[in-house]
Amino acid sequence: MNEGPKIALFEPDIPQNTAAIIRTCACLGAKLEIIEPCGFLLNDKRFKRVVMDYMDEKNISFYKSSDDFFINKKNQRIILMTTKASISYTQFKFDINDTILFGRESSGVPEALHKSIKDRLKIPMKNGKRSLNIASSVAIVLAECLKQTKLI
Image (cartoon, rainbow, N blue to C red; front, top):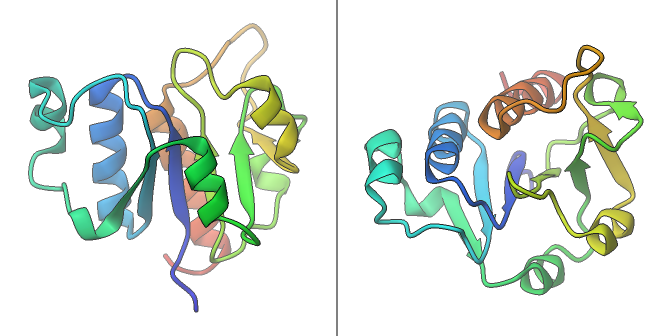
C-alpha cells in the first residue's frame, strides 16, 4: 500500500520547529511521526501559536521510544538526515513509502542509532556552515522526495 513519504522526528526539543514541521507535512501531504519524549508539552503556547489549525491527529503518529518506533518500522526503509553523511539528498533515489528521520535539534540521534541506519543523507552547505534549521531541512528534503515520487 502506498501511503506516501513520512517524516519522523527523534525526540524534538523546540516546539516552534515541530509546529512548523506539522504545518509543512499537512500542506504537502506527508505523515508525521514523533518519537518521544519531546522536550516540550503539546499544549506549549509557542507550539500552539505556530501550529495554528494544522494539528490533524490522523496524520501524526507518536512513538513512546525509539525502540517502539523501530519495532513498528521493521522491514521499512528509514533514511537518516545528518550533517555527518557523505551522500547528498539530491543523489538519492527516494521511494514513495520512505520514512525520513531527523534528529533532535540539540544533539541529533545517538551514535548507536546513527550507525544502525544504512541510508544516511545530508543537505550540502557552504563550507564553514554547521546546519540548517530542522524545519527548513524537512521542507527541502520532503519537496525532493515528493518530486521524485511524483506526488507533487
